[in-house]
Image (cartoon, rainbow, N blue to C red; front, side):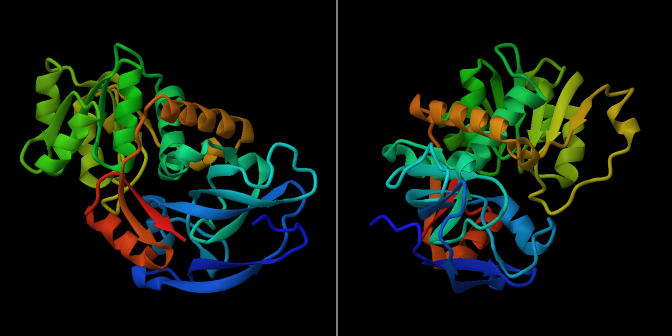
Length: 332
């Protein structure tokens, strides 16, 4: 039922009280105030789990003063609107991504500009894809404009980001090479459009990429693994190509001297922040609208695991262990 703007709502949240392992996540109940000027209150129906949540949990990325609920994307239904809200109304389905954290909750307050209206039928897809989809928009349109002549290397091609990247890049006409960890993941990546898959545990991905590209290397490589994978990726890219580092699932990033970038290799290396990208409301809404249009045209986010909100710790364990393909959703 819609909530009066003067009502308070009790939200169930999964919060982090101190950096640590998955066991550091605990439940609490919090009374949320009514939405203020320019705010909406949503009852969440699906919450995305991302590697950035793990970086927040371990202390790798800074957070506001603890305790605080984690989570940076989700979808739900508007149940109250604050003064001055003109583009949203009670009962609308919306999705969102971005800071501040607070997504691991049954209810949350959002600024009007951050809550994107979505058709009811794609709310779960939007929750599973908002952060990764906006990241994809940034990577394929801002960091390196991808088109029909682009050869693209995607690490972890069967992951949530990898599957969205592959579909979107293929729609732009690119040739996609993806690294994966198993035959099952290779089959999944190919079913979503990957032109070539490399089993990185069995094959030297650098040599295989060079074999597939006539010895030249790809135009563009996107890496969310970090560590030695990022360092070796430099050798899989052609001169004047681009490497984008967007994560460190391995737990670390290498120190890469400028002399490793050029002049010998003659590469560009980017470390773009999706949170910086979507902190501008105009950029955020443009990218989110482009993602929702892609979903409406058939782009398919894969939901590999769904768990109740109170099992957020298990969701983190599954993501860290690489036990899932695609995205993970929590259900309040």
